[in-house]
Image (cartoon, rainbow over all chains, first blue to last red; front, side):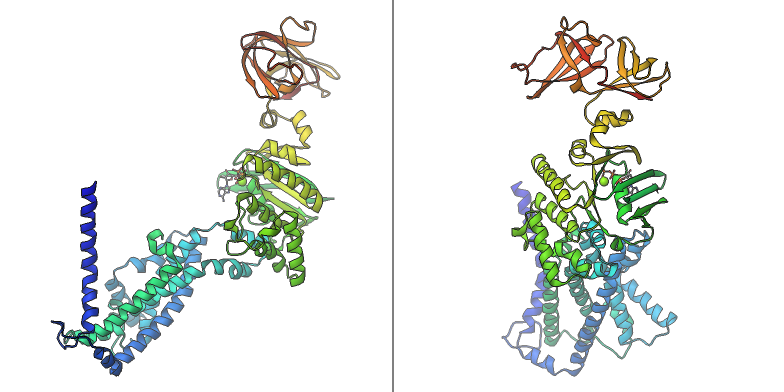
Amino acid sequence: MKRSTFWLWVASLATYAFLYIPLAVVVLFSFNDSVLNAQWVGFTTRWYAKLMGDGEMLRAAGNSVLIALLSSTIATVLGAMAGLAMHRYHFRFLPLLVLTPVAMPEILLGVSLLLFFRQVLDLTLGFLSILVAHITFSIGFVAVIVRARLAGMDESIFEAARDLGATPWATFSRITLPLILPALVAGFLMSFTLSIDDFVITFFVAGVGVSTLPLQIYSMIKVAVTPEVNAVSTLLMALTLTLIFLASRFAPDVLKGKA
Amino acid sequence: MALLELKNITRRFGDLEAVKDVTLSIDAGEFFTLLGPSGCGKTTILRMIAGFDAPDEGDILLDGRSLAGVPPEKRPLHTVFQSYALFPHMTVAGNVAFPLEMAGRSREEIRRRVDETLALVHLTDKASQFPHELSGGQKQRVALARGLVNKPHLLLLDEPLGALDAKLRVEMQVELIALQREVGITFVFVTHSQQEALALSHRIGVMRNGCIEQCDEPDKLYTNPANRFVADFIGRINLLEVEVAASGKVLLKLNAEGLGEIAATDPRPIRVGERGAFALRPELIRVFGHKESADLRNRFEGRVKELLYLGDVTLYKVELANGFIIEALMPNAASGRAKFHEVGDPVAVCWRQDAGVYLRN
Ligand SMILES: Nc1ncnc2c1ncn2[C@@H]1O[C@H](COP(=O)(O)OP(=O)(O)OP(=O)(O)O)[C@@H](O)[C@H]1O
Ligand SMILES: [Mg+2]
């Protein structure tokens, strides 16, 4: 009994160390007063200052934020509709259709979206293709969160609203919407997070003209892992963690794995 | 004129006929109860009246107008759900105000009506609380207030007392009767408790397997059940297999195998030789020492097999000559002793000739 809990502790500590030490190193070296990522020299914020002067980097960051905002807004609306539909109608294939992008390997999604945009739509790759791709993979997440929220609710309250004189629209705006609002906020934040640090799919559908933050970082480390990369990674990490934290506040049940 | 009429309503779910050719007519101001075992189709009928479901055949009329195709929000009736179905994000007052807001009442009127209705169900002090902060009985009353506040023509109540404990249940039953009398709204009430149905209703429709078996006033159902199912479902009853030996204008002679002749009354013309059941309530049977009252008519000897002392009454299970075990209920008040007889005592049971009912097969 004691023995097994001891090894459980060791195993989980080792796992967390494995997960978080590399992240800690990145954060640490983003404040290191040296061009080399080898040895701690002294504290500085000059890499952050340099980042702010890097036009290309700022443009990529701007793209990332704009795409994240737009894609998560649209994905929240569409995902909420999908979640409501999955809850209301018992079409066997609907959940499959909506949730497949969530489970599909990113590289597959990336390749198929690329083929779709180029071969089928004959679209010039760029801002729009990235936006559509991000919406595609976010919808499923929002749908799952919204459906989980609805599943925990007494079905008869929606009938009660109709019974008490509310039109379908009034039922939605007065009952359904307020009740799924936390799920919508959580879904939005989740989509935002997914969008802002997506690399694989964006890589396939970005084309040449437009870059996002992850793509920019990748193109920089092809040369060397500079302290500037550490700095931008640290900022991205801070943003992601904040969003995940907020999302967990709005829909605790979803992030505890009940979905 | 009838307020609500169901005309030959049938509803099928796949192969299952959940409601079979039900015809009912409910008057304004009536407290009507649908009573029946679980799964007999009570909720299905309410859902069709409320408009969440539609009959496959037949028509539902309210005030003489067909409800076919009328969406739930356009029907001048409200439902009190078994699960309460309170809106969790609204306060008690918010819940009760909802139907008034949907009906577009003025803010002033909403405030006044909500206050009045909350006072009616004794919940004035809970107005600003949320449903999850209330007890089961309080939620129940909020659901009731919400259904009543907009003064619907008709209130449908689906086992609204089902979730309450015995004591609260009785309290709520008393409140329900008073409330219904006070507001004068027609109630269609669903329950599977026969005691509750008898206590509350003006009229009861007893259901089985989607059919209405009998529809009558509580005392008539109790004393004059139409068939074995109704007899057995409502209260305790003895059912003896009999054959008609003789049938007169009023008098009926029944032959119970191994027991002898039973005298009963029945004004219907009944064919001699017909087989059926003789139904007799336990409280109409007297139990004597076997030497007493030897000259009575319906008198049969037996032996006390079991007895249950229930405080105010004692239930005797008496085994008769043909092996039938008849239940008799005797009040304990008369004797000053706890029981008249002991297990194993030879006794005689007897009843008046108009005590029981003959049920045709
Ligand atoms: N939507 C549905 N789909 C299929 N079958 C249904 C549906 N609704 C009800 N049924 C069936 O119809 C029958 C009657 O159901 P109903 O809910 O009306 O019973 P009830 O009398 O209200 O029972 P209870 O006292 O348990 O609430 C049941 O056998 C039930 O399984
Ligand atoms: Mg039911």
